[in-house]
Amino acid sequence: MRILGIDPGLNITGYGLLETRGQRLHYQASGAIRIPKGTLPDRLKTLFEGVSQVAQDARADIAVVEIVFVNVNPQSTLLLGQARGAAIAALVASGLPVVEYTALQLKKSVVGYGRASKEQMQEMVMRLLALPGQPGPDAADALGLAICHAHAHRGLTALQVASPDNGRVSRDAASAGTLSAAQLRGLRVRRGRLVG
Image (cartoon, rainbow, N blue to C red; front, top):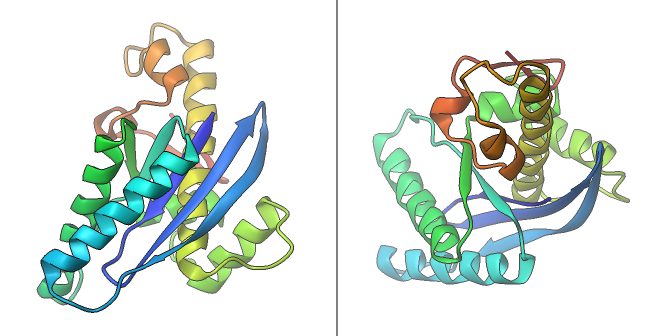
């Protein structure tokens, strides 16, 4: 399965592509889409086009995006929400199913600690993927989202195989990696793995 992680932002949007083969994660690509200053509609258009191009080049099976948290500044939260909407629209327009995780789920899955710093995320992503150097903070978050989904997908598939009649997640949804936030509700992360 090829997993495309997107960390949306109005200034910089990170992306990271992984491929899973069995239990192993294989780094494919990562980077950042830099959005020049300008009017909000122009910036959203640039973001949409950039994510669309990344999605086309990635040939991914699924995309993962971080769920927006409510910031101290409501204006910042609204702007981030608009950037996130443009990114999700680009992914869906490219034919990709989209899965979402909170920052807490992301950090617990990758670092094992929900309040991990950006530097800790970069370090753990580098180690988990055996990269020669630390990725940038936006690319690290995007790669972390892909890692988070790979762990969740593996855990949900194992749960389904162990208990096919649990009623929470269908075998087709688990194998396809198309899990909604509602299907993930009630599950938690323990030692970087999703458990029931």
